[in-house]
Picture 1 (tube, rainbow, N blue to C red):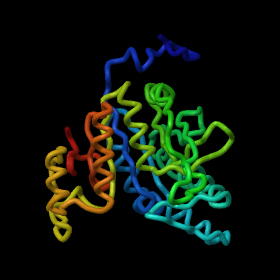
Picture 2 (cartoon, rainbow, N blue to C red):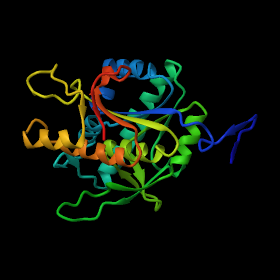
Picture 3 (cartoon, rainbow, N blue to C red):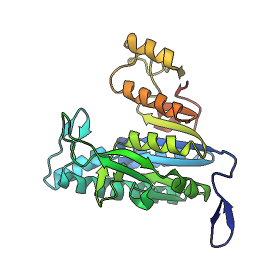
Picture 4 (tube, one colour):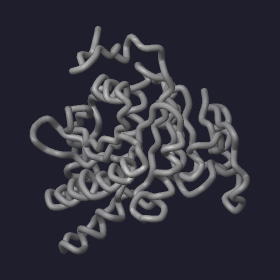
Length: 273
């Protein structure tokens, strides 16, 4: 199969040797402050080869909602997305935050393209069913058209993915950025040797919460069970690592948990099978 280009013929990603791809997920706090955003984009640009950036933007969405007189409701750290809140997150995630990142990358000669799941139908979701909590217009991912992303990447384009999907019924859906990153990584593992990086405020998963230098170098399933039993790993880090193992079992080569300013280095905690 050949992808037709106006000026030449480009081998499809299926026919190419499996190149490396780094997918970096960063939280809203990092991308919402001008200084930390500038540093992030500089560090991100130093990652060699193919790359994808996935971002949040929750604080900006909360601030914008407050300005518009819309109360933000959270349950277990998840945003309740009613019709008015959906308008806000679509504007903020798909517009303000996403395009600031894209403009910043273009300023340092990284040819980026901002996308929501609705763009080219690359990520399709269904509205989360109501169980104990009605989360509103929140999407659970059902399909990733990875060939679209792979073709963009093969042309030297860097996708910047906002935490928004759609239901192919005309509705945008608010979707967790970790989920976007994980689902994209699993789907793109068919085309590339994928490293998935989750960035937060620490250098990695710590052996001791009070010692920022006590980074655990590697976590296997057996070590994970041991650390959870000993309460070394707890809280929100548990599902993050559990989802990392799911990604690895789906073909992702490596998952790394690290600090945003270390993404172009070999530091952090590596999650491996």
